[in-house]
View 1: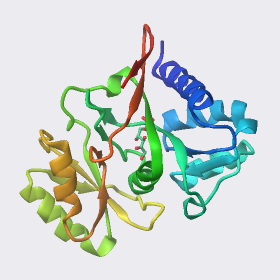
View 2: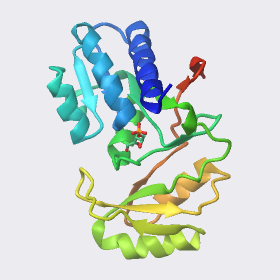
View 3: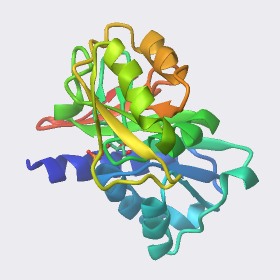
Length: 222
Ligand code: 5RP
C-alpha cells in the first residue's frame, strides 16, 4: 500500500470511530495536514449526523466548508467529544510531535477542549523515542532570535521556517537535535521561554487513541 492509501485507511477508521463514539448532534474537532484532509473527506460522508466541526487551521476550515460542513468558532463551543488529527511522530505512550504543517497552537487549543484525541497516522510515524523530526516551536516574531538562543542552550539547533507565517501571525522555529527523553518536562520547559507561544510536543495532553495504518490493516492502540 502507498503512504496515501494508509492515510486514507486510517482516515476512514477515524470516521467510523466518530460515528460510534461522538453523539449525534455534537461538534467534531478536526486537525490539519494531509492525513487530516483525508479524514475531512471521510467526515463529509457522515456530516448529516453532526452539527458541524471546529477547525484547527484556516486550511482545514476551508476544506470543511468546501464539503458543506458548518465550522464553529471554538469560543461558541462547550464540548468536543472527539478530536481527530495527524502527527509527525508518535511514541508508544501516545506522546506526539506535531506542527509540521505549522498549525500546532490551534491544534493544541482544540485538543485541550476535546474529551478524546484520536491520532491518525501511517506506520512510519510510530517511533521508540521522538526527536528525529525537528520540533516546531511557534514564537512571537520579535522574540525569535532570543528564543533561538535559549533553545540552543537546551542542545537544539533551531532554524526559522523560511517564508512561513502561522495563522496567528507568528513564526516557527524548527529545532533539530533535541534529545526528547522526558517529553512532558521538555514541553513545559520550552513553553516557559518568554516569546514562545507553544511548542509541538503533545505530551502533557497526549493522544488517547492511535489509529495506525499498516500493511496488515489499521491497528488501534490505546
Ligand atoms: C500540522 C500537524 C500535522 O498533523 C502533522 O504535520 C502531520 O501531517 P501529515 O498528516 O500531513 O503527515 O501537526 O500542524
